[in-house]
Amino acid sequence: MRHTLVRTSSLVVAFLVCAGLSLRGEGPPPQSRPATAPADAGPATQGAVLFRQECVFCHGVSAKGGMRGPDLTTGAWSHGGSDEELTATISGGVPGTAMPANNLPPVEIAQIIAYLRTVQQPPTPSRGDVARGETLFFGGGRCGACHIVQGRGGRVGPELTRVGSARSRGYLIESIREPGKFLTEHDGTGEAGARRYDTVVAVTNAGQTITGVAMNEDTFTVQIMDTADRIHSLVKRDLKSFRHEERSMMPAYGAAQVNDAALDDLVAYLQTLRTPTPTKKGGPQ
Image (cartoon, rainbow, N blue to C red; front, side):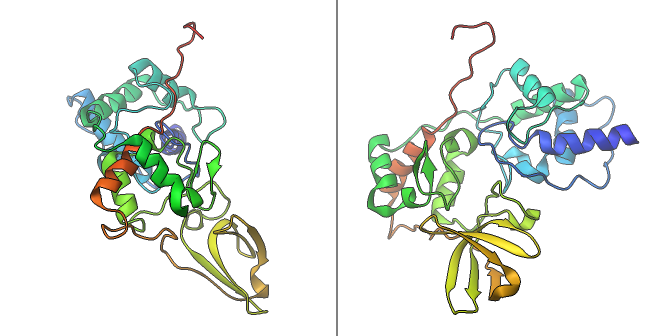
């Protein structure tokens, strides 16, 4: 029983950064382990059961990504996509991230990889102009005012340096058209529900209203980053009011704000933001 609980807890975290962005933050371990697949089921079927038990909390239904974890169906892997490389990522972890080493049996790692192969989709070709998309991203105070890419841009929104490796084209479009549908988690401190890019509003006793994202929060204090990237460290008992609004700070960009052609350009640029292909050990440097 103890071995099962340790293995279960490890795998929940283990898939957080299996592919794409280093989205940190641990989720609560499952309370119980459902029944396994029949003994005569194929590896992919067994892997699907394991994925539903251990990974769906972070990576969503059918591995298409969730509020915490990246989409695992895009075929873009941050640390290599061969069976050998995926096995190393799952079993050995990724230093400097929330991806730990774990003692999952090799047969179960192979089963999960077999399942991921069945849901992997061919890359979706870009439909727009990358150069125009980059200009749109950083021009006019739009995306680049809140999102950082390779050290350039604002910080109040999620970093997008590797978003093309972590999210599908459909997800990117939905995030622009309906940004409040899924609120990405960040790597600040606080309870799981507080580590999200949702809008918070604090009103001080002096009447000052501060709107932004809670980067760090506990029972007594909160640190809010506003749209000018300024950090406000506040003691909650000294505030007139404080609330989470459960909505994204990013406005929805409908066709009136970003037409379909401009959207294609913007998404084409975002799809180029990928993790460099890792160099195999012993290979050319």
